[in-house]
Length: 340
Image 1 (tube, rainbow, N blue to C red):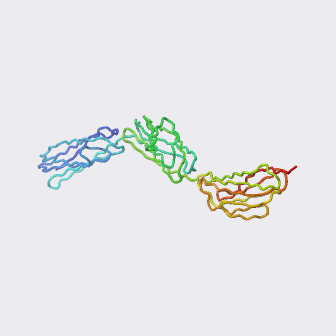
Image 2 (cartoon, rainbow, N blue to C red):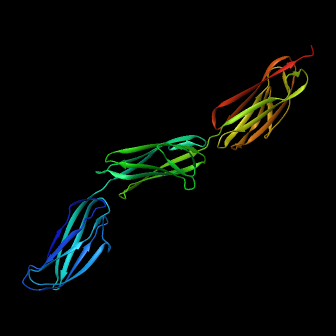
C-alpha cells in the first residue's frame, strides 16, 4: 500500500521560501516496489529543476516511510497549489496536494488625458500608480512611453526623460498598501493621426502592470486674409489696386474656399486677377471657390479700381469655406483726394 502526506507553510510573502516536505509511506504488509514520486509545481512557485519533478524512491518495506523535501520559492502572488502523486508496481497510486497563499503587492497603473487633441495644442496627462495589494513594496518605478505624435514639454515629481527611447521615468520608491502616487505630464501634439500612450509600473517583488490610452490628433484649418491698398492716399481718377493675400495658417487643408470683394460707392471696377476665374455683379467681384487650400499655402488676388469721389472709402473682402459656418469679412480703408 502507499500513503502520502505533505507539510509546509500555508502562507508566505513573495520572494520567501515555500518548501514542502512530502512523506511517502507503505502502511501495508508487503513490499512496495519501484516507488516513484511525481510533483507538479505551479507558476507562482519555483524549483531549480523546473515545473515537473520525477523522483525514483525505490522499494518501501511494510511500515517504512521516506521524506522528500521540495525546495520551493514563492515568485508570484495568489494561491499556489502543488500536486504530487506516488506510484508503485501493482498499479498502486496515491495523490495529494498542498496550497500556499503567496502574499504580494499588486500594482495598478492608470493614465488619464484627452482622447482628442488638435495639432499644435498642448495636452496634460495624469499618470498614476497604486498599490492595491495587502502589503507594501519598495523600488516602485513608473514609465510613460511617449508616442511619436507628441513632443515632450514637461513633467513633475522629478521625472527623467530619455529622448532617444522617448521614455519618461519616475522613481516612486516605497508604496504601502492602498497608497498611490500621481504625476502630471505636458505634451504637445505635433503629428496628425492616432497615437497610443503606454505606461508601466514595476516594483522590487516583480509586480508589473501596464496601461494605455489612445489619443487622436486632428488638424484644423485657420484661414486669414491680409488686404493691402497699393496706394494710400490716391488721387481721384487715378487707377489703383488692392492686393488680397489668403493664407491657411492652420494644420489641415481648408476646402471649398470662396472669395468675394465689395467696392464702396464712388469706386469703379477696372480689372481683377487671382488663382480662379471671377465674375462681376454691380459693385461685387465674385471669384470661383478654390477646392482646397493646404496648410501653410497662400493665394494672392488683385483688384484694380478707379475712385471717382473724395473721402475715406472702405474696400471689403468676404471669405467662405467648409471650415467656417459663417462668412469672414475683412476691410481696408483708403483715402481718395481731389486736386483741390
